[in-house]
Length: 275
Image 1 (cartoon, rainbow, N blue to C red):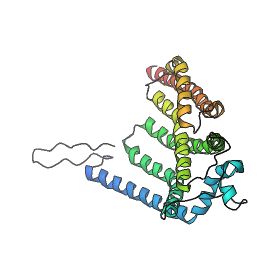
Image 2: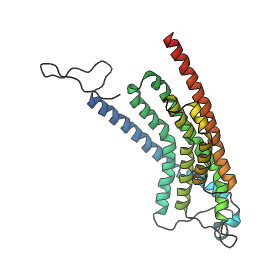
Image 3: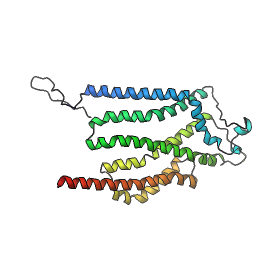
Image 4: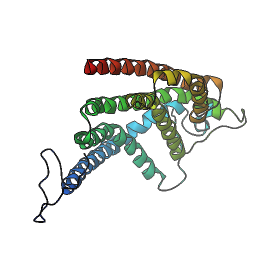
């Protein structure tokens, strides 16, 4: 979908664009339309998130509330039956509400924004690329959400380890904004890490990597996976690292199988075209 300059005829007038092609201004109008629709989707998602910000924060605070009360100073200072965080600035509650609303906006608007991106680039793709574009958009969303949900399951283990490092003489009285920032950082990191197999499959479809090269790099990939798990996970204890590394290793092996399937299908198509 690239804008191409059209040659001028002898009279100096621009030749009309070929059927199916778009002029530069049409490209810009199309881009503006897609960006506007995406912005509207984000704003609507943000408004929904702001209305349900209390419910969102209740979900995000749950890993902290599941900890042993002995690790939470709030359980000794505030109502023992409630799980509460603190704020230390007058505007902290406002920014906390914005963060909670932003979480909902991203979750609700991301599929629609990706769809708009797909519709914008589709006219410039080859038929084969166009066929794979939409599945990749959908799968990327599912993988990101899967990574975020997986991190939500692992985070209580990480919090328990972090808050118990100083011993029994120190208990945590966490700031709400700092806690929510920690949660979002970990969930986004896990979500991006789960996109790793999709990148390998895309490189395989482009012919950049092969199943043989992926098998040859397996030991290096496994080492890199555990290094990435040590960086991404909120703790460095072996159990949490293994929980993070295990799905990434499984995804790498799955990428090898997908690459092998792609290569076999490509060879069959080449054989049919040369027959």
